[in-house]
Length: 294
Image (cartoon, rainbow, N blue to C red; front, side, top):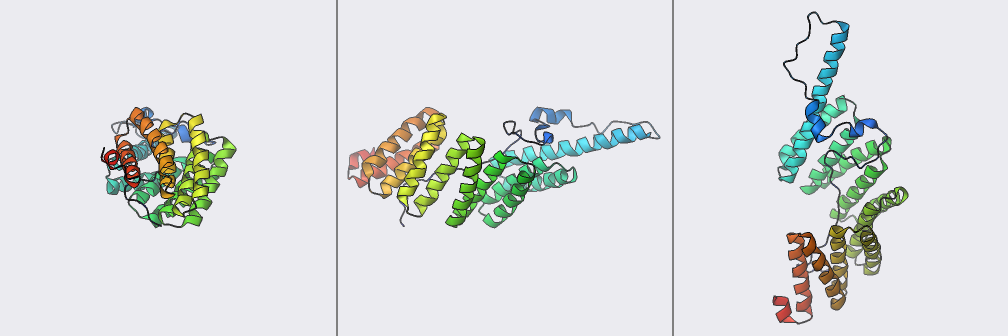
């Protein structure tokens, strides 16, 4: 199946940073700290205790040591997330591995899972898909154990995306569908729309354009309902791509023009340039060369 070089397909994966306050968790430690709280839990190394230490002070000392370790792990996690944004993946992975070890020792499953998730995401970024799957699966086990349905669903979605990148489309569809089922059961409409978009993307890659359009339209409807303009552009572009492959260029043009109007509002220059290229490609196919050049 041939894809035009001028076209860009849009998929969604989920990234996590701290704090994640919107997630409803059964474990209280999940939202124990925010970035501001982090500083409050860094214990000064100059603290002195009476000698000899009484049992009471020994317990305090142990608690302070734990807080130090906990603060260190959170700081490593936050630093790693920032490093990832700056494309410093190697150093980010090093810090995440250090944080992971501490969270394991402190028995904090939520942030252990979160750290595993971020490690998996970086491996996916750099194309090490088997390593990515390994860490996503470990994170998935933890999120299932602590009953965090929302993040379990996001993990399933991202595993689906890894399989899609590996061109293992049946596996990708399976994980996307699992994620979709959970998001529908818990009423996560925004993430449901992402699942539908990603399922449409797989069917588009498989050349099953009727199914692709069906899922894209479901995604588009939800994104319009929740007023998700940024991701609406994503789905509009993908629908335009399908119609372009079907050589229904007028329809493709309509969707891409709608996407262009929105992307100009939200100010995403990268997607704006891509959408303009897609529109130019359509005009070229329609042999309207002056408009294509414009």
